[in-house]
Image (cartoon, rainbow, N blue to C red; front, side, top):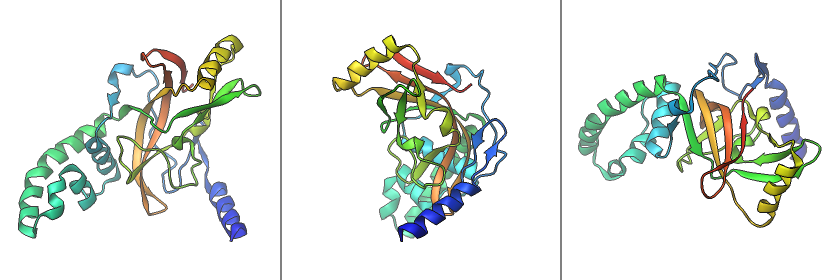
Length: 231
């Protein structure tokens, strides 16, 4: 069983290619995904804090029509509605959702707090802290990170290699950060990204495909302790 899985994983990994610019291709995604304009100012990034935003982005970029799961997430009263009540409620809801989806297609720069994000202990070989986050799962796997508590849509970065290690070459600075981590500090990690598309990974898992453009590690006062940007 383990050997069969290992062989399967090796085949999938071998199938994952690199697109121009070093962006890893996620299974089920086109290799010609659009990429971020790295000169985009922070003010253009939209904070994602609500589940509705995640569902709207997925449907807008996947081309899927709003699913029952999406509609239930946005209006829980639909779950208990009879067919006629559901029809009336959906008819009222869809025009606004379609307007939001149209906007989402043109505003793909987002920022959110990665609640799974942690820093691994300092690594002297890489002169960096490991970015220990669900976002960093390899492309061949199914489960990635989540935004706004939405468990049914994964967030799958296509450029994980650029942020696997958060580099701090200055050992004095690294020592101070490590001391705080060793004392039990759990940093807040903000992720800035460009939404490249949306698809079903392996035909099953709904996923937003994103290019991470910046990661910030913040202290309790919201001050930036560590920042790394896409080069």
